[in-house]
Length: 68
Ligand SMILES: [Zn+2]
Image (cartoon, rainbow, N blue to C red):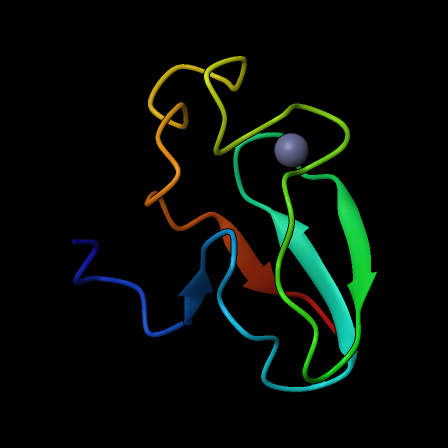
């Protein structure tokens, strides 16, 4: 786990805690999610799938970060 960052990260199928923009950490793509939805695969880089960037090919990897 990343202990040096206080920011929460979320992974695919985590419930979105609040409306807002979320940043895909591996590719910096920003996507809007609404509270109660589930986080999805990043449509820009496919993080969290077998086609995702190196180190982000597993579904359990946290990569969505609250942006605004
Ligand atoms: Zn991405």
